[in-house]
Image (cartoon, rainbow, N blue to C red; front, side, top):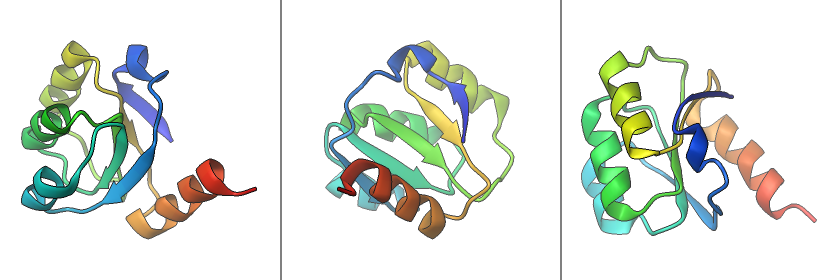
Amino acid sequence: MQVLAGERGLDREVNSGYCTDLISDFMANGTPGCLWLTLQTHMNVVAVALLAGAAGVVLTGGRGIPPEVCRKAEAEGLPLLHTSFNTFEIAGRLYHLLYAQ
């Protein structure tokens, strides 16, 4: 996984994860401290993540990220990470890291 922006916020505690590509779904169900996994790469992702108090956003699927999205996340201190794994794969890996005993 590559950190694209918000490195200063990487020490935030992640208490859950949420996988959705629907902005409205995350607005309704994202919770403070969650890590949002999505393939959406537009500016609204940053705004909604901040509104929900997300610990960070993982952009999945290896898609190109507009530079203005990275700049906004950096300015807001929002960790924005990028991976070539699809959402299912990275969700499984992160779940294992967070919860495997």
